Image 1 (cartoon, rainbow, N blue to C red):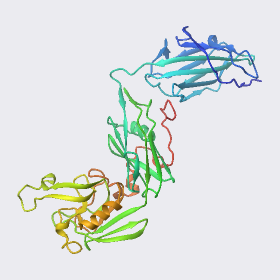
Image 2: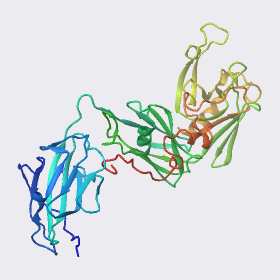
Image 3: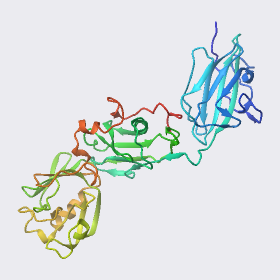
Image 4: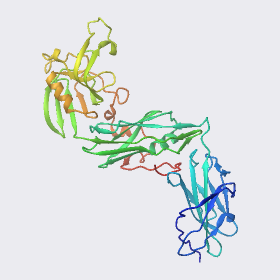
Length: 420
């Protein structure tokens, strides 16, 4: 009866500049095994396909086959970072084959264990380097956002790609390699905003005082002809209290909540007719203690009745187009009574300073009962929360049922190194 003995990991070897099989650089030594102190050199029993000389074509899988009556019992292939190469050994032990192309420019070490017809163990150690990407081969880099730090519970995660990804299969590979791990756990999913941009959000807001780690495992993944994933920098964000500011444009009031409890009610003014403030959920994008607001930046002609050029204090930006919550001492008489602004939410200097010091990036600012249009989901800041969860799920490239992650995700089938 055959058995598969355990052979300890080879501790050291001398690289020999000798051709083996298809020309791999090989090295050998002796293992100290409790079952056999003298495993044989299995080089003559093995054939290698894929690599040529000491370089390998990174578009081809690595194949190792056995002949002469013996069989392969185990193959361990790793890159220089210690990440294991995915592969499979057939039932007869006659062939092992990697399940993906090799990463361009990476160096690999392959440890093969065998046994002959008498059950005697053998082994071989091989090293080679995959050919570097040629000038026509592209690299897809992912830039994750926001920057590491503390944010409000409404902060989406973003992924900006260096190249467009259009095919559903390639998008699914990218998406499954973008890992978002949250403590406490959340149900969340990625949404393809366009061919180069993804957003991630939970089904509802992030938990308070959560830790969210985000990273890409795309390095070494083949995404299409002449396109490979490149290494990317990960990030960690934390959340604070759940701070929500809800502005009722009809009653001209803003109610600020912390963790569901009202902490302050403020009289405000919002956009007047023709400049109505957008309804819906927005997220604080940035805070500016001082900003110069000019009507020309939003398309209002200089010298017209609605033109303005004002120094503004305590401004919290909520849209890319220039909607803020800010101090408006010139409209104090209308605050709590009428809407007279050009779309921003204005309040007294004292209240604006309090609001500025209370909120942080990622906190929620919601407007209701305005005659303005709804906040767009993606093209004017973070309106992500204005999509229902079912609509959000339509933005995933993964198969139904696989777009939601709970603290973890699965690497794509074309992955060479399972995790970075």
